[in-house]
Amino acid sequence: VTGTADEPTRTTGPRRDKPPASSPTVSERMSRQAQKNTSVELEVRRRLHRCGLRYRLHVPVPGVPRRTIDIAFPAQHTAIFLDGCFWHGCPTHGQIPRSNSAWWGQKIQGNVDRDANTTAHLMSLGWHVLRFWEHEAPEAVVERIYPEIIARK
Ligand SMILES: [Zn+2]
Image (cartoon, rainbow, N blue to C red; front, top):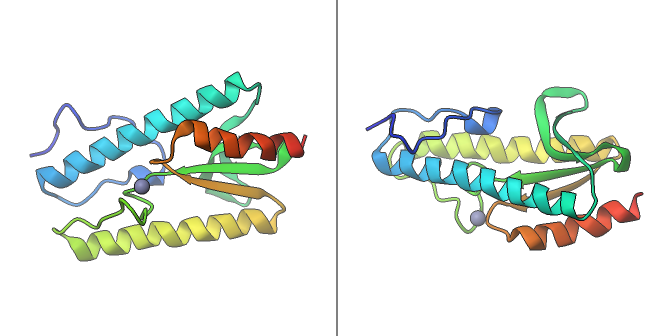
């Protein structure tokens, strides 16, 4: 079963890669994760804005234009990533689907490796990198971001 009304229609960036033909359970889970991720990111952005912080969205990683920073503070050289539990292999929620498990395992490990490379690359350029899971409470995420930005103003 594909093409249900619940499937995300936005296709922004590599983390929304299409899966292989998969069971309804898998597509349902992915759809839920994508929506959840979006709403968490929106909520974090809303709260940052309310705190008076100004940021830029989906800024290309310097030197790696195909990859983007979810929420960037260029003047403070600070990059925020809000990683989806499913796609980025959250230790708590990042379970590999049972069907096509080898494919999914490789796919998600590839994302985890890329995340680590992106973090290392940004740090080598003098950026400060903060990564969060989408399951973290938005207010807790903002509480950790805020002092980091203020300290670099
Ligand atoms: Zn999680």
